[in-house]
Amino acid sequence: MPDNPQKQPSDEVDRNQIQQSKTEGAAYQTSVAYMANTVANDGGKKEAGEYVIGYAQEEAEGMYELVEEGEFEFVEPDDENCHLEVVVADAGDERFVPYCDVSATLERHGEEYGPFDLSFLWHPGVYHYGSNVEVPGSGTYDLHVTVEPPEFHRHDEQNGDRYGETAEVTFEEIGVEAGQD
Image (tube, rainbow, N blue to C red; front, side):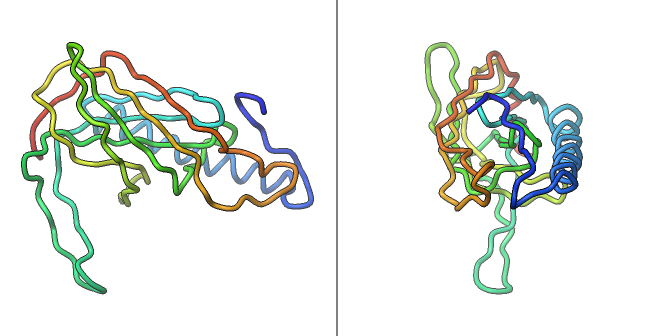
């Protein structure tokens, strides 16, 4: 499979649907760029096989957790001082890829922190994987991200054989600003 798979018309998808997917992906990437370059302390993205993988780093932040049906609790970070966000998108149309198992490790001065499991996070601006984590402090780190293949079924005999291999990417010398928001 090519590094940047492009969908082709088939019995499942026509040219119009392919273009709609690319339009959706472009809109998603606009939101990703805003999050990574304007909102976050640091961010970036790289192509990795069938994926575009991106990251953003912010201070740890509180989030709602579902306690039971219809009941939420807002949970503030404890000792966590870093919020890692990772986006996983299709390299062809750049849409978000759901149901991936994503983990990240930060490395500084030969010491590794993690791996941290990054679960799916709903965000009003951009879907992503993420977690609050604890690091020794602000500074420059290398970020290693691993994306395991999702187990969902894939439509389309011609275009469906994608996302079958683990992807790994390293972002070198990212700026981490530790703290709590």
